[in-house]
Image (tube, rainbow, N blue to C red; front, side, top):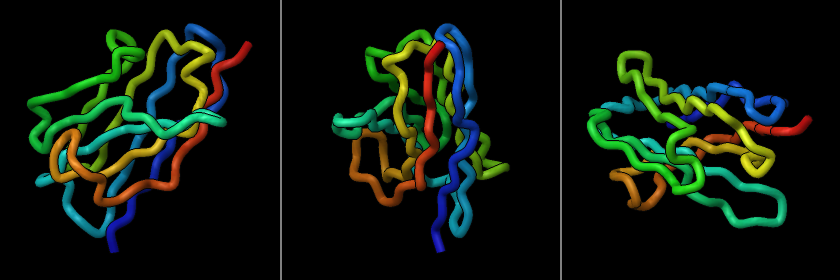
Length: 119
């Protein structure tokens, strides 16, 4: 059974860093794009970043460009989101997702991990 488990969220001060991980089981990531999304209280879920199946292409929301980096290790069946220079407006539940291709439909979601940026 396909399962995605996020980890690495937590409370961090503005300007700090976190690295989120998304471990997949029940299937192989090799053939799929992977994305990170987030949902803040009272707001719609939004795309944050996406990486192609072979890692050769990435894209980012304008709000996180230059601060966040997505990567993947297909041997470990894991995708990462390195988040630097965090801002209070980055506070949200972060979800990883499996997609056939970036900007395509989501095939599966993780359960989410909370990121709170506050002093």
